[in-house]
Image 1: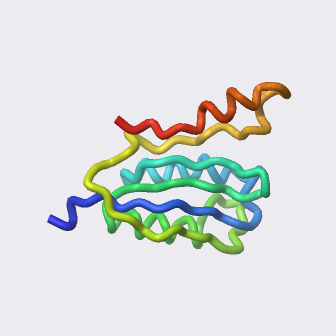
Image 2: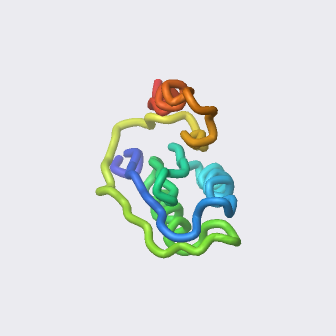
Length: 120
């Protein structure tokens, strides 16, 4: 029954990954694979995220993050946290979290309140 376990990890992609539709392509790839989680632009020019899914799909998604990305991206490296096993999914789908800097000044509380886990 080990194949029924959900695998998960965090990631951060370095290189030219902002302003090149990287997150939109990651969303499309994750949905195609059935991988769940999220991604977002970070303040330091990277794309961060969390993915969870079956081991085989996780391997494909991790390879995509390492080598493919969006057509205009230039991936220098990707860092992954240790892969963990879970009994069930924590997310219902894959989504893009809004950039904190996309919100108007003074809306920092709104941005931080949207960064919760949507598990249930």
